Amino acid sequence: MTLTLAATSPASTVCDALLIGIAPGKGKSVDVYAHGLSAAQSRKLAEAFASAGASAKAGEVTRLPAQTGIKAKTIIGIGLGDFRNMLGFESYRRSVGNAVRSTAGMKKIAIIATPDIPHLRPLALGAQLAAYSFTEHKGKSKGTTPVQSIVLLVPGAVTPEQKELIAEINVISQSVFLARDLVNTPPNALPPVALAKAAKDAVAGLPVKVTTWDVAALKRDGCGGILGVGQGSTNPPRLVKLEYAPAGATKHLSLVGKGITFDTGGISIKPAAQMDEMKGDMGGAAAVICAVKAIAELGLKVKVTGWVPTAENMPSGDAMRPGDVITMFDGTTVEVLNTDAEGRLILADALGMAVLEKPTLLIDAATLTGAQGIALGTRISGVMSNDDGARAQVCAAADAAGEEVWPMPLSEDFRPAFDSATADIANIGDRFGGMMGAGVFLQEFIPKGQPWVHMDIARPSFNEKAAYGYTPKGGTGAAVRTFVQVARELATE
Image (cartoon, rainbow, N blue to C red; front, side, top):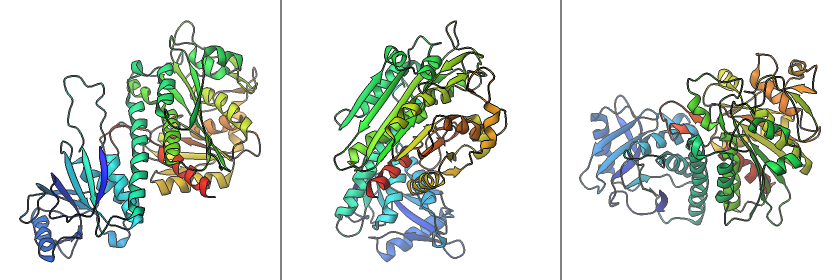
């Protein structure tokens, strides 16, 4: 799918659908917001939308047949709501996304766009991210494909700033699409070795160095967490390191992503219901891979290191047992009380390696706990940190990027619940505050003075319900945009 800019007249643009912003007017009337149309055309459209029953509330999509004097085959109203009372950028993105999703099956659509960069950005991103589908494993039933081409119509000549913005949106969107693809890929098609290859392929041709640890290398370096989780599967674990180091970079961002390609829970096996969704337990890894790809393509002047520990958590005669003690990369011994608390074990090895480089900022993203969804629901990621400033920095970047997050505490009161009579620490605490408890476990592997942020994206990374706004059913690409925004800010500090 291509997203482009044009300065052509909306009325003379040949396309399958012309998308126009509409808002509630006085009484039951509708106001049309579209540059390039005559006053008569705008008035006629407003009357037609009102006759069609449009309320123009935010997110509403209203279709009209072709109109005299306009070459588009269909007119679609993008409900903006009462944006005069500050329509938020996320509401704007979702409203545009709803309208674009309704054009699935079309070849070309045009959207009448606001030319200023602050408003063009959310419009372009919402439109682009909505034009997604995952059909790689469809056989006879391909389904309806998203619109193939989107052109944003701006008044006057297209400016260099607008062109730069659209190029950036295309890069970020394609990286989000890849993250969605990885999460949506069936587990038999994406074991750890295949995820490691996907990471390498994602950055092929970019100035990114890729290093992969196989089982022998993991044993050599003492990565007991990755090895312990992966030992129950016939598909061996891997660890991948992606290094982007442009000349002149003064800041170093380190990203770590949980890469469990399928999670049965191991010996502490999960219920069968919805276990198929555990193919998405590598959403954090997908975010790291695709963020490094986007950052390198954008040429941001910040050093970025991505760490992808990946394993398949399966029950077998070789699987890790409850009660086993394993030794992590940094020498910490962990009593495994529940093999379904496996993500924190592979993250601990990768975090232990990452901190040796003393990055400016270390962030991990993981589909880590069911408790995240209980606390914050299905769309809001939890953000925890050992540094209030770092947590605020990531939360602000997420807000700027359009991803919903919420700051959560890491209280020392959680730590005693992880005490073990056998090892240095147990891998689970008590049943209360599970999201923060998992963060407290990870904090054990972060030295004092190292700014570190943990993002629990368990529910936001996989939308099990119907598509909404620009978010599809299935993989969402959570955290990619936040990571890119953090890198952008570090590059300009």
